[in-house]
Length: 256
Image (cartoon, rainbow, N blue to C red; front, side):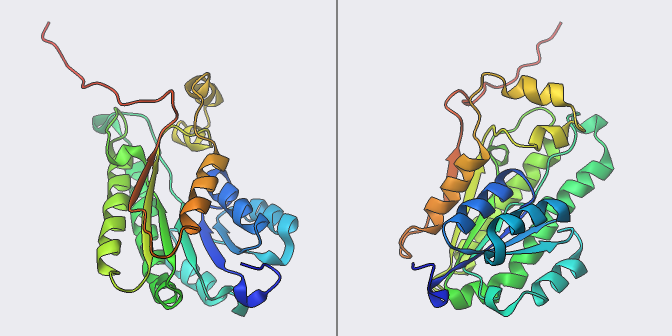
């Protein structure tokens, strides 16, 4: 790809681009000469991306859960950003650490609305464009889709949806040339734990200390690799963990 040739320049749309994985993905692709549509709620953080990369980044500030706002943002894309080659569904969150019987129902609903409903809607809206471009869908799932942990309840269930939805899309899009990949990271040092614990910096620092977690840049490099594979290759699922993280044993509650 020659970034000086506008016809050769590909376009990526990434959600949740104001921090963490999403911001790193946006920067990785923009730095390589791609056009990037960076979507997130926090306009001030998106503005920093636009200032860094100029006209190669188009920012779209809206809440991914707001269906009307999402539709308006997509309908209002400048002409040179309309042909989308890669969709990265990154926006998502984990809320709360309590076991299911003590969990906050509003937090459950927010995770379902963000991690499932919003992801499905934006994907459906963009499918015609992706089919036209024989593009790629990358859904950011989690190892929590496969391996349960205490307090993971609805978060893990929403990520299981993301993984299964990816496989379903892969089947439905058979013959279109569109590739679909579910990337499932383990422990990663982003704002994840701060959001989940309501801003508890000590809990976040304790979790990651000495663990060698995945970084946002690690994940961005992984998405870059997937996006630049030859078009006849599809990565269905890609599970990543830090070397210092491995699979836990089963729990046993013993009688007194």
